[in-house]
Length: 304
View 1 (cartoon, one colour):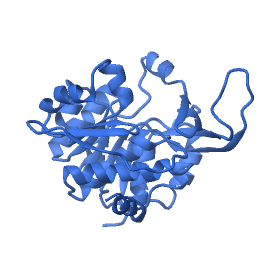
View 2 (cartoon, rainbow, N blue to C red):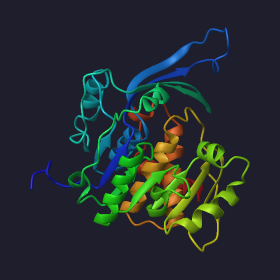
View 3 (cartoon, rainbow, N blue to C red):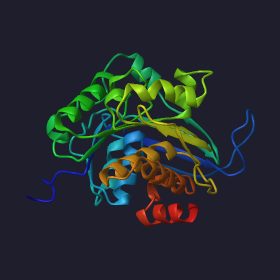
């Protein structure tokens, strides 16, 4: 079997974008005031794009599918992943400009901009339908929830193939949550779908609905996690100097995928994913400086 024909460690399905990122020099944007750009880049982004970059850096091989790739994004994407262990073959390359976002960043603060609401409101699909042949033989998967029926189909294929998957921000009553090996729920998700509820109370709703591990992240606050019929556990994030939070959650997801690949316990998984995220937020831009395994292990050892 040729190198190209070998099955990858992980299958990733979801958002793959071209991200224009702008790191400001002297503080965040203020109305009617000039802001100086310190650094700017056009690089792969999106929850799946970023996770693929991180997993490749950690030494895992991946195959990715999801968003249709347009003419402005395609050359950058192909060039960036050339020579990396990231298989782009499932992707559809179209004739429009492609999906992009724009992110302004200063330290802990960032503001993403795009046309995603407009794209979804059009009622047209701008992503692929997952194929069983792409998923079959992979050891772990990661599925973004944003593509509705297609996201659920990817989860169902994983179920048929006996492949555990990580998802993000899936609600307690969703198919994705109920069948996930790990569901990582962000502070943004809890604020939107479970307003005015404490994180502990949200976990008490979510944990009984799945056999998998549910994790609630809270930025610099404690991570909470647990399983059905178990106790809620807490873990503090690692303390690092923050340069940019862009991609922190996507890197955490990638860390969970890597942990599943290597059979880590729940405590080890949360610690490893948190360390990945800690490395990620200490540099900019993340795609050009993704966490390496030795760096992640170093953060864990330092934090013991």
